Length: 227
Image (tube, rainbow, N blue to C red; front, side):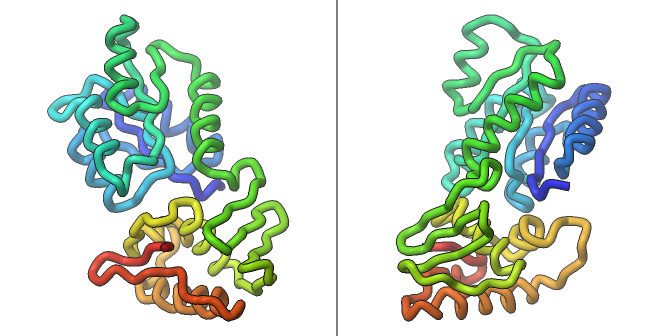
């Protein structure tokens, strides 16, 4: 199963069930909700890789959810695919202007939605296409599973490699311990949050092995960030 978490925000129970089943069968982890307010809370707690967002929701509608996500630096880069039964051009323009990365009109082909979803993930996740991640003097070769700093090859354990990959995908983003547990270890595995501190410490030690400074920043009361 992929470590990518997809959040489905849809108030039609039948469509929600279909999307959840389809995404699980495609190998993704899935979280679902039928309310905009809860969607924002889930995003804050679990930092999904992508959001499939219905336009028409009770309470906080999809446009407002999207607007709030795109206004926050912590969530602005999460792709949003907006779903709507409204096919008018003005509605599509409103959705895209609010910050949605794609707009899919109901009824839609599940195969098409999956293709659009994969396109968005490839855009933000170089890991999906076997590329390299680079930040300052750090290079992560995802295809060969190797890490270099200032041209020096570093030795990282598998957990430290996944941690560094998460940091490198979103430099500057502050990750809470809970979000790192979700992203690196998975939601179905119980690991104490203090384990994150241990592995971040190991990652820092490995990155400093190239006689360079510590690129990981500790944010008191919040978590960790790269740069």
